Length: 373
View 1 (tube, rainbow, N blue to C red):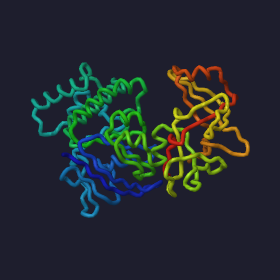
View 2: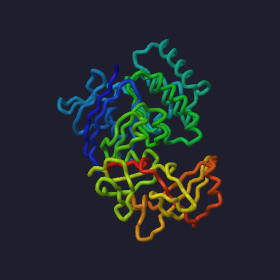
View 3: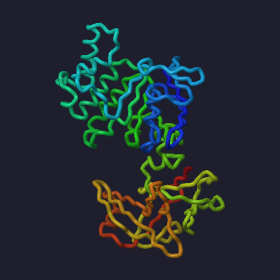
View 4: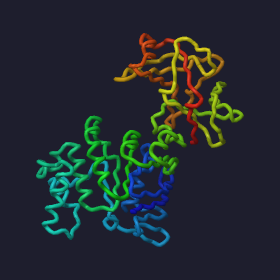
């Protein structure tokens, strides 16, 4: 079984990169916000960037080892790397770009045979003599993938391959890339900040925050059971608040007297609570239950399948429920989102609600997710 082992450290301007993981014959997603060290990790593995210390090994070949002064050149590592902008040679045609990645020892017959195979596999028929500036973004991506596969790599690394494409084009290219990844037997690293892409392409995930791995595990587990604030944000949860534990039984907002009931085991390292907006219920009149709070509708966002209500807590002697989270850029998150399926019977009760109306918010303690920093 082919295996990639990475254990590296590097001091940079804004943080210290400290990444350790293993990847076998699978696709490992590396997720995180911009500037968290995702691309730097890939560049270190590729040999473009040199860590301060650590060890990188693919199968029985040591590619980097600071203790033994080993640092192979990029071309000696035999790793396929798909950059965000694809980096095709602008003065080469599609055929020439693909052939540029092939092993130098190939005969003319082997080159011709392999070229036809990749032209067919990546559906590049009719584009063989076109230059990159005459190709669409999706066509450029397929050429870059063909060139990467033609180089006969032992491992693949894809750095946000859809970041430069619009939503419609991305959706049309997903099946082709999925087929290409499934055809490759070896370690595959997939960098992204899109949780939906990660769920589609990756068997396992690691989440990076300021250069450090905060979460690691099976893709579904990391998405459904985040352990860190970074993973909680990436999972698509927008209702997040900082809190403190009260007797281990309640989660109290830092700037509020409101106590959120919890069934979780709260520790000193647990600092944030979040809940998905589809786990929150909304009522026009106060229900006779403890876990309900008065809110005011700020605005409504209409989608194809649902209506999302943005609501702000109505202050009395208390301050707020899930609306005290302060973003790093100083922007204060002060609303709770409630999503209601347009096709549900519940929606019919709220279709006349407008901004300024008072409603009641309710949620279950079981649906609250607690994470560390």
